[in-house]
Image (cartoon, rainbow, N blue to C red; front, side, top):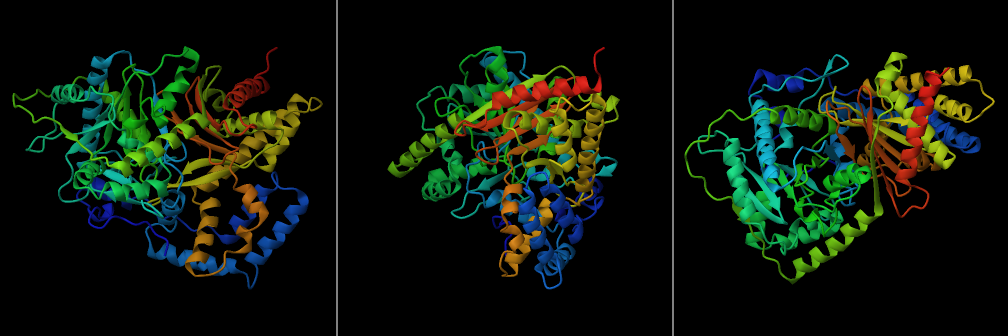
Length: 617
């Protein structure tokens, strides 16, 4: 059976530990995720293929789908299996999805998996202000956790529907553990003796910093600041081996190195301290100054991967669920591991931090001496040294291959499409597909990440594009013979069609997790993989050349991650009322893709769509 492995003794399922009315509400106010009707999913799948697949291939795929869904086909049998699974589990797809998408993936976590969120630069420059802000941030996170533990975290809603809150307690004291064939996630925060420390890393050196007093009260901001000064005084040297680099490697390679590393008692204790910590704080050294135009891109890349082995990549432990990154130049952000965390809860946490950091800590520091933060040492033998050198080389190759383009589109924001009674997200999705067409002369398989937290233990599904309506609009838009009125009508139809797809996914009727479930159900029952998943059309339709995600936030933040395929892009955006933040990434190894070129096309396309909506006289 394919299921998530949890380290024995490290975790109990969170929902069994109900200690307050609010915690009870986190799981009981949301319904189970439905299994969509088979016929509906197959029809939607077929419609999604029409803009992407030539007519002769479509005819073949229709026959394959009819065979799968018809009498004697596997479809009905597998659907019944999923419905049985839904009746017996809290969520019929989440465990499978986490295992398949994350824990069984062998690609390195930086770039390929862990998303980064880059936030507006703080108004400071220098290590003194860096440590002052770090102290505020630590207190803010601890205050957020205190609200969570006390059951005082407000229940979240989307479109009037309550959202599942069960991811929140798993954010703290959790870590992904590498394995030779697949990873697992260890959660230490729900054990009887929950960890009381965080990990701080500076100049590649890791420290265990206790953040609670013996009576359970948290340290004050001034106490934490004093401890950070102590850590700085103990981490001057820059010639230390960057142990964190090991976590950036291919998962099989890191899994083997992990086992070698833990053979030594000292190493095992240090690694466990990192894994068990509430979260990690990365105090980054200054980076090379560049132009203001490129600063936003460099800042996002620093949070995403650390900038390389000669920069701050050794200040990361990529397996850790939460890593806050604070630079000496005022840059800061958060890096998270996706097997446990999702974008919206992370955005809520960051919003709380920002609001908290504006207020001074009213708690007075007691006149009690604190123990020195514990430096975590490692015994590095010849084998581990070789593992580090190989990981350094591989990470630098990966970083040099990634093109990051972050920019702020300031001509207008989400208010403009709203004024025309159009969905801002659907409007931007049409713009992205049109921009891609103008650069590459074709449309492509695109996934837009949508939350499923309106269901118990729900994670995500994809909204697929382009639709047939989107393709019709794109072809009309680039045709000078088509009138403005006709283009405007087709634009509205394309946006409405995308909004309808969004509504279906938010009802739990997306097609991608359903198709995955049918495939994995066949494997679970020991059956051959159905032909529908071996069909050429399925491969083309899931070769996601555009990986997109809207992460709306109350701040001018932007999320950043790498493309899903070598010849693709990843695009994240945060629409504000009068501007939109974008991040675009692509791989330099692909001659056809270029993040700068697509960014220019996105800007131009948005401006031309605005002209279409509101023509100048």
